[in-house]
Image 1: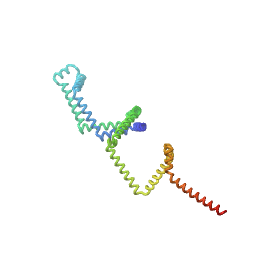
Image 2: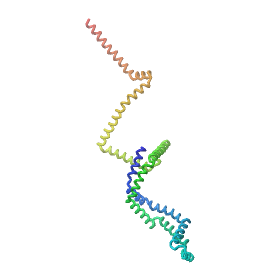
Image 3: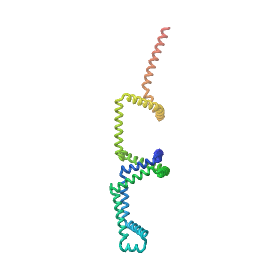
Image 4: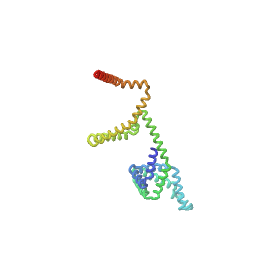
Amino acid sequence: MVYYLSSRLRDLLLKEDTDVLMQRLDELLREKGWDKKALTSISRILVREAATEETYASIRDALEQLEREKIGDGFLSRILTATNTINLDEGAELIQQHTCHVLEELGRDNSPLQNHAANLIHDALSDLERDEELATLVRELQKRLAETLPIDATIERILSGLRTHVQADLQHDVDPMEEHMPAFYQQLRSILHAEYQRMLTLLTEHSDLQQIMTRLMYDLIARSALHAQALVGIVVSDALMRLTDEELNRLVYDKVEQDFLWIRVNGSLVGGCIGLLLFLGTQMFR
């Protein structure tokens, strides 16, 4: 069982096509709305990071480095700083606020920015379907996963835990399927009941099917009887071997006592008739 399930899982893993995998991922993201949920979660994390003092310091350092590269550290730079023409603190704060605003807009449900980002994700997935390098990488990943994943041990552990759990439920007079999968249990019961009623209807209405079932049942009973013939002798022999001589004599005597009595009576009558005939014959020939 474990070997069969693990082999099936490995075959499914190796046979999965890259294009189909990307299409399924794209469809799943659209149907479940996971693309926008992922953007919302990512934007929340990024907003928290963008609002920190470390981010502010990084933005200011980047602006200062850009100022040095473009203007230099000479007389003009000092004049611009002194006249407050270039205010690095204010610029870093504005950039930080605008970044947080953009990220919040990205995380807002069905905002134009979020919809545009989701469309970009789906376009990227469509492009990846035609990427040969990605297809090669995915196939190599499939092979390595099939070789290295502990599929056998995992399935064996799952089945062992399931068996232990089912046995515990049965010891407490609990139906495991009804207890843990009520919807599936009710659906299965409905299907079996409908099929059972359908079978009864077919047996009632179709004579050909009745004849087939009659022959099938007769054949089944006949085969069972033939198979049981070999066991009858063994059962009888074993039962007789367990009896003592006294029990065996009593059993035989109880079953054939009346027959023995009739045999004696018949023997006496027949013997008397034969003796009478012989007596009469001898008297007649004197």
